[in-house]
Image (cartoon, rainbow, N blue to C red):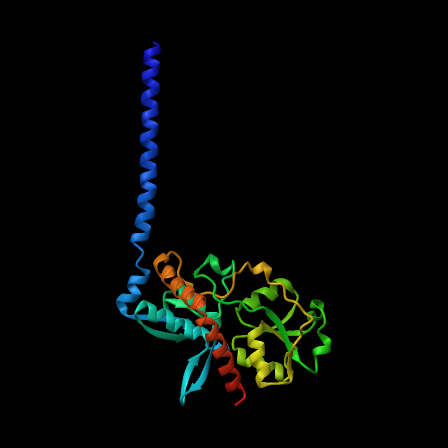
Length: 284
């Protein structure tokens, strides 16, 4: 009887070990298959072109400028796009889009990636994936010198007409921070700046670098430095390249380029060049 019990226990133990091996093996196979069946990078290399969605109205990230007598999409995002395409060994095609159409265009596979000053927020990460971040600029309040005295604390934004770019990070952020705010949501950053200059809105909430570009061309504008915008709720590491989910090969390739640009100091040079070019263009 004791012998039979020992035999039973031995068989049961061996069966359990075999089952665990099978389960473990299946898991490894699945992971291997997921990686081996990802053709996100191969498809781009096969067609020979990287199609990048971009809203070229957000200096110094991406903007139109006259370079050597030609209308060119400039900015450090455009430089990053060119470097990514170069490292892939393919041509670059920039598809200009309105800012609020960027995410849906990527999800419908009309573009391969988005490089357009997009912050990798928690909300956006629900629908798309992002590379490592390559830039961060704090959000600030831009107003006119005439109205600056009206903006001393965050509460001073209440009751004011605040401009934000439609569907932008600032649009979502300010809607959370100021649920009852009076917002003017406009797709074009250029139109927002014009609205501020003409007194149609009281202030704009946007990236600090964009504000500096605007001030360079219009000395009547100023940053309300006493107001701090808390963007911690966005849970974002910074600006990154957006790409479709489940594209590990494509993500790995682009992360290599981003790391190279940051480690070499080349990206910092892109930022300096873009800021200088944007300022010179706006003074014309």
